[in-house]
Every structure is written in structure tokens, then in C-alpha cells.
Amino acid sequence: MDPERRSVLTRRVRLLVAATITYNVIEAIVAVTAGTVASSAALIGFGLDSMIEVASAAAVAWQFSGRDPETRERVALRIIAFSFFALAAYVTVESVRTLFGASEAEPSTVGIVLAAVSLAIMPFLSYAQRRAGRELGSNSAVADSKQTLLCTYLSGVLLVGLVLNATLAWSWADPVVALVIAAVAVKEGRTAWRGQHCC
Image (tube, rainbow, N blue to C red; front, side, top):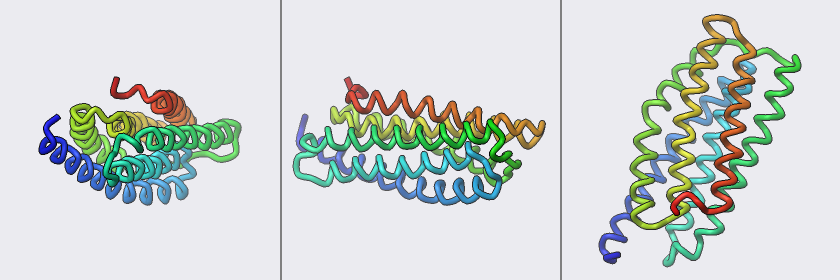
């Protein structure tokens, strides 16, 4: 690849990673706070996923801050994979506890708004980073874009669960949605561990 084009793409990945980190820090604070207030495992899980996205994006930022990003790629992918697995473990435990009556999720208007906003923003960030990562041939940048895309799917699933709870009082929908989040996180973690996103 032309060195000038590589430099442009590297800068683009850095900017997209910075935007992802900024948005996800805000999203995590709002989701975890609202989830704690509503005793919502799905909303807390969504907030923790946002924190994991920050860790994932930070790993990619670290990788691309070096002179030779390719040498740091394997470590960045491992960090991303462990982040997914940690999310899955926490969300599974909390969901099972909720399903067996430890607590019942309350409706959350803040959570519904947050899920809708994320559903609108995340696809664009994911697409731009995935495109730049593929052109660079960077598995970690593509893996991080998949993490952002996962947030889009989770936003949709979360939105459905929160709306069902708010409108039909189906509190069981919350932990079921959280288990879907956990299952997807395990799948993406395994893919990141193998480094298969780009190839």
C-alpha cells in the first residue's frame, strides 16, 4: 500500500476510535446508572458492553500508536476477546439471578431513549472503521468495528426488551434480552481470539 494512503487510513482509524471511546464512556455511565435504578440486568449489561467497547477501542488505539501497528495486533485481539468473555460471564450470572427471582426489572424511559440513540449512531461508526480496517488489512481494527456493530444489535434487542417491560409489564423480557447479549458476546469473543475478522 502507498505509504501516504496508509498514513491517511491510520489517522482515520485513530479518529474513529476516539469518537467510539467518547460516545461509549457517556453511554456506559447513563446505562449503568439507569440500569441500577431500574434493577435491569439488560441495561447494566449494555452499559458494561459500552465499557468493553472502550477497552477494545483503547487496545486498537494503543496498537496504532506504535511505529509498526502489525506487531501489536495479536495482543490487541486478545484484549478484545477477553473483554467479550468478561461481559458474557457477568451478564449471564445476573440474568440467571433475575430469572430465579433475585430482583425484578422496572421500566426505564432513560434506557429506552439511550437504546434508540445508540441504534441510530453506532452503525455509522462501525461501517467507517470496518472499511478503513479492511483496507489497512488490520484484524484488530475490523474486530473493534465488529464490537461497535455488536452495540447496534444489542441496542435493538435492548430496545425491544425495555419497551416490552414498559408497555406489557413483561419483566422477564429483560433477563432474556441480557442472555442474548451474553451469547452474542461469546461468539464475537471467540472470533476475535482466532483473529478471523479480516480474513
